[in-house]
Image (cartoon, rainbow, N blue to C red; front, side, top):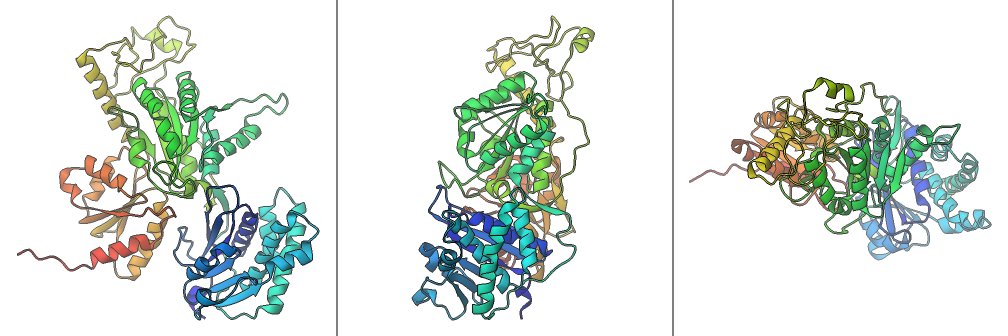
Length: 606
């Protein structure tokens, strides 16, 4: 038995969208974790409601890797339409557990695979024929049982996985467990084990961990960050962020006696209106946010520029998907980084946070509101579909301990002590002016909020020197933010080559570094977590001969930002590595170009 076959393989379930397979997929995922074995599930689903192919990958990984892998070791084939291509995608030596009615002939008959035929549809009819629409859902659970038997996954552990999946529907466990036993018994009686893939219990690898989606973590961070206003327009893959926020607010922002809610959540007519509501609420002193994706961000460009120039706080969560245009609504990319950083016409630069983990999705959500208030500006939090909609094993999220940072807000008492103030005056030479909130009871509290040209006292102005002075101050504010945004994480040990990445690309880098080390190539690692770039980024890049900038977009957007902002002598050290096919990046997308480049013979000049 090969070492890779034990607790180190990928299961792919190929099925049809809308068939109810997700519950079965998550049940087997939870069961494997219940055995103490880390897993990384990835859902690849179509953008329609029902009927098109969908795939669910469960990476079983004793080392705890969280990125996608190209290898498919165990295929559960439940979609006749994709039967041929699904079998072609299984690696040599792999396993195919399939509906018995599918023909194993021609291109689907491979000598390097092990096949197990199970009549899932027939078993469903025989055992659950009187369950109506429920039968198709229970039929999916039959595959869970058959797979559990083939992988040595005990039934009591599977039942634990079901209870985790149906924790709010305890009555569903019994009927689903009956379906699991049907598949388990059939595989035990009819499928003689002829492969080497199996599961073994582990200790200490999943203790204290829980599954969470990034959108849920961000929503919880909004609650903990003091958000009281949300305006949104539904769009994949961001909709669940506000939906989770609504659920949390119903629980934690609603008076249990009166039913009165201490939050305002509005579904706007479009994304432009949603952004307007967010900045209106931010101007009034509330902490406000919206959640969207690339097409929605496009529509918000006008208000993003207004928030930047009029200096009004607001938080925009962009759960990125594949663009341009409508693109691939249910695929992931990091294609909005350059767009969000400079969103709006004219000279505009925004604060952009780049979470990579569930913990950061939660923490950066809270931090975004502090930064928006402190710098009186829009703040973008750029997640992506992979982080936002997939489930990740994560430690429990820590309860926040630091108070909110509301920034330079003047009260009536403050105004009594001041001889005078100007709304857009830079008193502290950090580019950040002072502001008052509507309702402040003082004769000097009022000011005009302008998206047009204005001087330090918020008076309308078209004077060239006033305009330039204001833009220069906004640059100082942006420069000040470099010291406040989350600093890069650097894992250095004196190597001459480094990988630089951000967001969910991080997880592929973790595995790639291990495999590169095994291949004799050691690299350090820099993870950028925010824009504007911390000064530490340039200092760190200066230590290396080459820095490979890895990202999930076609044009190397962060690579371009680095080239525009770093000192000239550092630019030539950068190399761009790009992955942009819509599915999450895997380690080999990094390993292959690095090995090719690092092992290439040196070019000798004539």
